[in-house]
Length: 448
Ligand SMILES: Cc1cc2nc3c(=O)[nH]c(=O)nc-3n(C[C@H](O)[C@H](O)[C@H](O)COP(=O)(O)OP(=O)(O)OC[C@H]3O[C@@H](n4cnc5c(N)ncnc54)[C@H](O)[C@@H]3O)c2cc1C
Image (cartoon, rainbow, N blue to C red; front, side, top):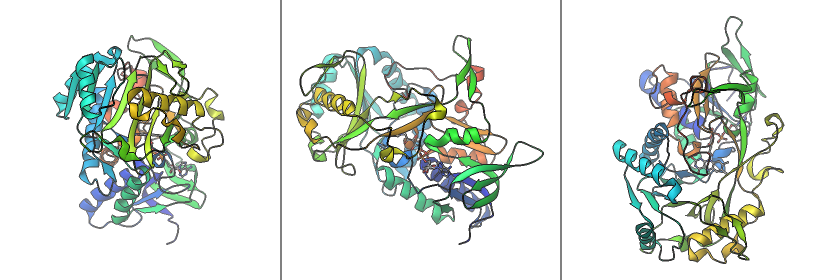
């Protein structure tokens, strides 16, 4: 098929957001107009399907967020995951947030609000009851200093690449054209307005009515192409204005795999366990030599995963301390010569696993050495921006919460067709200037 010269909608990025948007949009157009044309929606990717963050993500799907707007958004996305678990390669095993006393109040409020929105979860409080609950599931549970357990009965995880291919198949079945190996290098602008009239690519220009940017860690490149501000003003919760705040910052998301039989992490009744997330302020000691790793707050998450061939998970990310313009996102993920998970991560994560469950003691020797993890491009408050810029360019900048947000494309497609989404409204760009920020939790992770 010839390279298109025009399309009504051009979507940049064949990851979770680009493909979910294309699929939902195509479904709605089909419903409205019948079969539509092949050139209604074109998805472009410089590499291939799932070649960005969506293809390396751990794949955890949860509702556990301190921010009410995030929880409501996640509830919507969980429904989309549940709508077709087979094609999305989704495992609805549930999710557990296991916390120390310093987080008790925050997590209790999450539980209360989950009840209010009808998201099924159990909340266990107190040291003794938390230990009993965990031991009832895993006889070898031994994490110290835990005083609450939030057990979400929905959510779980999905297999990263498989789910993105599932989405691509759905989009193509509605006539979406996915063109890979095509890099977007610029935009064609109209003479009378700020609007984009075409997308310039390595294979030619595609004239279009609307552009959707779902570029994950590459979002800053598109922001810069459209000459959007590199620094912004932020009004904090006390009304104080912070001028010249950097718009983007990169963090390295650290993850790895313990090369054990995934079945070893089954619960005592033989089921596949929920995804486990533990935050702790207990001293963390090395499982190798007993030395102190940290006396500060730490956190890990893990799940048995046949796709990763072991028990897979991660710990809190770290900031990339260098000017954002100098951070090289390409080559991405496992191919990056610069941004990789380190031996220090392996030591901490494996020791933390052993701290939580006896079965992991001495297992660091099975850790899969080699490249893992990936860069993320974060917004100033580490929450997403879903908004239209330059009149017709819709940015889906998820600030690295995004794999679980398979439903955002549904809501974005409504907005592209003129229907505003109340779930997306709290994530507009002007919240920074207006001081309408999301509440900040006491979790050690920037995305909770
Ligand atoms: C190690 C790691 C683990 C994670 N784990 C989780 C998790 O468990 N749960 C969760 O919810 N989130 C997780 N995330 C975050 C999540 O992966 C991202 O938020 C999400 O995948 C972003 O999706 P996207 O579609 O916006 O971008 P991507 O999946 O990155 O897709 C963007 C696409 O744009 C393409 N592109 C870039 N530049 C151009 C260009 N110039 N022209 C054409 N195409 C271009 C890229 O090739 C890429 O395929 C994780 C992230 C990382 C790095």
